[in-house]
Image (tube, rainbow, N blue to C red; front, side, top):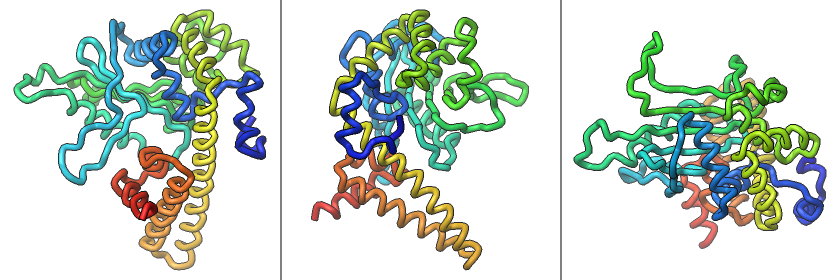
Length: 318
């Protein structure tokens, strides 16, 4: 069922009383799935990290979700899930459900570079620079020409020689899992994770989810974690607000594109279009702050700098 199938917030939240599962492609649910203080949540994240990094991990720990600023005015970076591994590696895991039409490649390169600079201390040799991973789950197609569910990017020469393999970007495209649902036995571990994240809340896909969870302990633990958090009313409320925001973002983006095209044909002024988009973003941010969303949530959803959203929040409080 979609958001439009429900007339009220209470009707939407009442799904939990009928055994419905939260949508793991929603930010709040995705984070909760992997970060609860439970064994199943811990085991699920452990399994996902091993699948994404393609290495065995003994232990790991969650860390602060905000990268430290190195100078006044530096653009902030807030990670959905950040963690370090027992051997000094680090990872940032992101869920992106809505294509906001900016360059996700550049964004991921910036995020992984900021992650790299967080852990090397003064006096450390360059050999101690950690290997870091920026892992993004996309519920839209980033590269339509690529048919792969999993894309791995690293710094290499044109003939394929790696530089140091320290900076790694991994994209998981959920829109392409239909082509691998019949290959559970030959898929990579991360491809099967993609199938789970795309279909775990879909009752018509229960058979394939049961096959997945019967094959791999980490996915079974993920299924248990999702079932557990789906009994949390607060998470259903958070998911409802997120779905409303994402729906409005899509509508706003579509409207801005239409307005931009019309303005371009009528006036041909790129400056006017840019100002219109900026004003629309500010107005959207203001509305969601009034709805009770946090400054961090609004900054991520609107793609406005955190400091700018904070200024809007401060103005509303006056």
